[in-house]
Image (cartoon, rainbow, N blue to C red):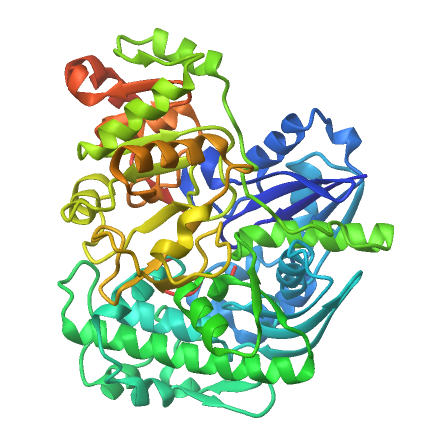
Length: 583
């Protein structure tokens, strides 16, 4: 049975394919269209999923969509959201999704609509490998739910309690994100990165914004929030509460902003921890599954695992709306077959497009670029790359199938030496072109992780933080609070990346690399070889290692590469940054 899962019309549109319950392919639409967080019906991702598995549209048994359009419309109408979106009423059509699936994808078969938070819950539980687990989903809003509590037991998954809009931890976090001058729906992770530079001096002020209630409930104090009636997330009462005007975009950051970010993070962790204790009392198990955009807060995840009642935690790697496509497909499989789609834990997310060595070779041969050909000599590729990293060079690493989800995990990555004290500032300023406080993550051989990080389990998806305990000096990946967001790399899921870490470890005694996503500010992660070359040419990346070939900037004149700039274009975004994207 072939089931396609789709998320769309909000942000992070994506498509996946389940074949007989096995996840075969998944990708975000943004990677193909180059529109960041593209909300469109994922036409290109859909085509990719079919091509990857050699299917035609006639082979698809069901398409599962990650929301219930009628329930969502009811919430939109109730909230009066058209007040800040002129002309919105003309676009609020409950049959819009079905029409898009029929007309834009050309699918005439069965379509199932799965509730938003049930899709999130299924995306985590059914791919966790747990036979039973408590399930917590937290985001901005789905149809009505913003937080749900559930239980997974073998082939069954049920949600037994939810918090409803407008009360939302995700919207609380987005509101403060906006107050701090970062883009809503996009800048929340910047607030998380800024928090360790501050002190929780305003935690009591943050607590005034939300009242924690019994069971799984909480309430926002709505007099401080404007997202239902204006084009701003907050009312004038919020700046009055903090005693300072909102920060404008691109204005300097100061200690006050860091203290607000830290205060928000502390309160978020308090509430999440309290609610996980409540959930554990309702579902007596040692396993917790999480999904939803708030589950991408890796600092909170680590706090829950270290201080909460659950011994094991699985967070869906694409915990944002993109991952809802996987959950929708999983629920459709359950409904159609009477059993869960997968019993084994999701081992990797290398589910996107790949490009053969021959394809890359033909592309390079069509240019005047000088490159080193390491075909049929992988050891040379790995040793040369490791040496260049040890010499202080920044590497664009393009290998195999693209990752699904927001993290680069060694397929579409920028790599560097974590021991270099100047590397973080250099990559932030000259390569990623982003704020200097933003941290980078370490990738490490799984067998070496405990020697360098306070981590007693695998962490292949960069979804929790822990303390750095290494005897090595690792300034480029150690955050100001001594923490790091670790990726453990396993030979059986990414052999070439594992081999590079081994080569770098043999050369330097450091089995760790700085690993960040292969993109620049405002653009999606690269997907194709052409994308990788564009990013290489327009940044200060020193070398591009693309499949079996190494391109070194020092060995190429920029004049030779200049023609490639004709193919570059400014990044576009599908996100509305001033107020939460409710559509």
